[in-house]
Length: 331
Image 1: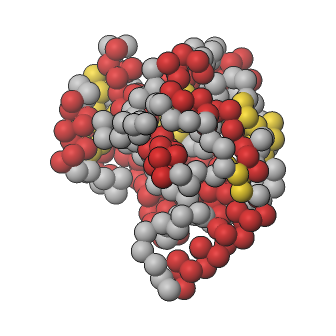
Image 2 (image 1 turned 30 degrees about the horizontal axis):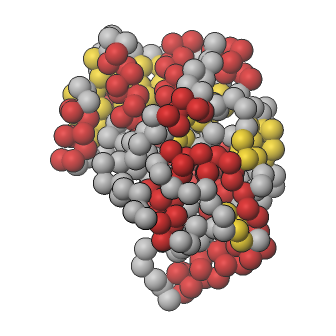
Image 3 (image 1 turned 135 degrees about the horizontal axis):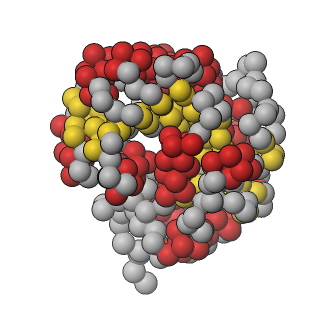
C-alpha cells in the first residue's frame, strides 16, 4: 500500500506519516526544502522534491498511491491575501490536478472550522451549516475556497473527503505551545475575558485517527468535524497545557472589547507604516481565541467509527514541545 502526503514535515503531517508507516504503508511526502527532505526521510517516508506548484513532481510521486492526504496549508492569522490564495487555493488546485493525473483513487483534505469565520458565533456547529457568503479574508476565505475545489473535484475517478479538526494540539507542537510558553515566561499572557468560554479541541493523534478513517471509509464528497469529544473552557485548557510543561495557570485577562480595538489598531499600524512581522494581536486571533468556538463531530463518530481514542488527560500526560522549548524558569 502506498500513500502520498503534503505537509509531511509539519506537525500534523509528521504524525500522519508515522501512523501510515505503522499501518504498513509506503509513504511518499512532498518536500520543498532540504530541511523538509531530512524531516520526512527521518520519519521513514520517501521525499518528493517540490512545492505545491510542482504539479508534475507531485503527479510522479503520487503514481501507484491509493490515497493522498493534503495537509499543507498557510495557517496563519496574518499575511498578504495573495500569499494565502497562492498556497491554500492554487496549491490545492495543483494537488487535485496531480492526483487526477496520477490516478489516485482517494484524496483526504485537511480543512478547519475557520472556514465559517464571518463574525457570527460558532457554537455547536455541524457540517450541515453552509459556508458563509462573505468569510473573513485570508485564512478563512481561502480555506473555504479550497474546500469548494475539493468537493467539486469529487468524481468516480477521484473520491474526495474533507476533515475539519478544531484546534490541533499535542506532543511536538511547534507553534501554539511555544507561543503560550513565551507569553507565560514573559509575564504578558492574557486570556480574553479570562477564557471563561468553551472551545472544542482535537489532539493530533485523534486528528490522524479521523484522517485515516476518512481515507478508508469516508463517503466521497463528505465533510467531517474532528474533536476530542467534550468541550472545555479555554482557561482550563490553557492551564492544563501550561501545567504539563511546568508553567503556572494563566491569571491575566483582557476584556473582549479592549482586545478587539487593540487588534484593529495593530492591524492598521502594520498595514499603513508598514511594520515587519506579525502584529502582537490580530483581529483573526481575537476571533479564534476570544469567543466560544465549538463544533460537533457526531457525523465522524457515526459514519467513520471515529472515537477520538486519546483522551485529553492522556494527551496532556505525554505533552512535549519542540526540542528548543525552554525549560521552566527556576525559582
